[in-house]
Length: 525
Image (tube, rainbow, N blue to C red; front, side, top):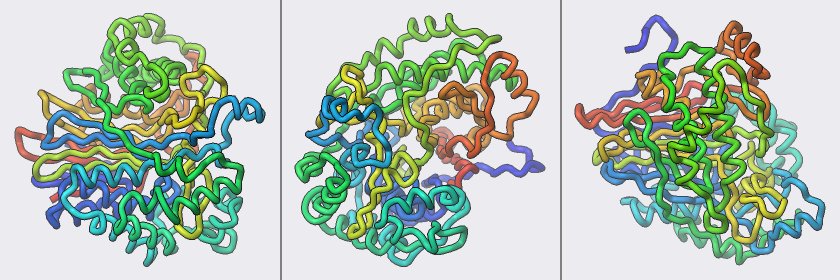
């Protein structure tokens, strides 16, 4: 039980169904669908479409997604909804053109968006309501407009210049040279029409015909290598989740090309210690050192498994974790590795559990804020920049190649106990997510916290040679970490956000939390 003298948030508790998203309108949309007889997948699709309207800097139909789905609280299945590089995108082309890294604001960072194809597939395979029913709330919000919420307004403060670099985006989003502020209304009529077209025609509305032609024309006008055939070929894929056991609970993640493997590796390293008994400096130091090891493995080994071999079993073996622990000192920071990915923090995550205990863990993203910044005015689509994760040197597992999917940072998670799904969860925040998963689960499984309390614990992130601390961490702790050799910085914005819904099968209740770092909430009935 939390201390009610403190300004924290209580967990949401419900008996029948629950949704948790990063924006109130997303959560309310999911609840409306559930109360109208829809299942968890219906609610998730409707909610993520709304989030693409109300948090346009973070997500949308021009992005990618991943999902873990546990039908009737069974063992989860995974869907990879990430897009692929154009067929003409050969790494040699980039070498010949002197492109050492892929700039997020160029067409070369735009892989074919995979979200719409994935939504349609999930709706077809597991939904009970029509796509038209599920996309209409988002279309209505886009058409009528939504007031800008506090966290969105905070994110918008520094993005006007980026939006202004694309003349079409500037006309759609800027007012007097700036993005809307808190309480001001943002309308997206072109996006509303596109959502309704997808609702009527399905995936082909996005991947064939007029919308495709506009997107390809916009990309080619900027030097992109895309063709209509690249869009027509896009298909999501059901994949087998990967997992590890931590404190007796099975933790499921999507396999590569996502970074869920890094989250599991960090947990495997932490399993050799007792984090719940450590004070702040020791815990943050331990998490930082485990994170460095996990991310080094990520950057060295993860690529698209359809084109490169990723030794998942070896990387997640007990022997490998033991070897990494043997190199870890509790009194001295290891030499930091170089970040292999450019920093970014824009994603939405949601989870839903329905009356039949179908559980969905769902994540959708444009990658960087407003993705590539390349906007298609007729369709109202902002294109993501996930291809910026590709490397441009031959032989690297994550080197760009025709039809290849890049390393992805967005990762939904699922906890399973005794063969039954026990908690869909996720932590947003770009590269932070793998560390965030491990931190959150440690708070649950080592610290015996409920989902809301676990999401509220101060965060730290060791990345790119720095240990970035949230400002809620004490100066004394920061000084001790610096004494151990960490280069301390204070996070300008908080690390990520998150949602989780615990399924208490014994008592028949759902217990949900939503991160105070965002505007969202967990609600049930």
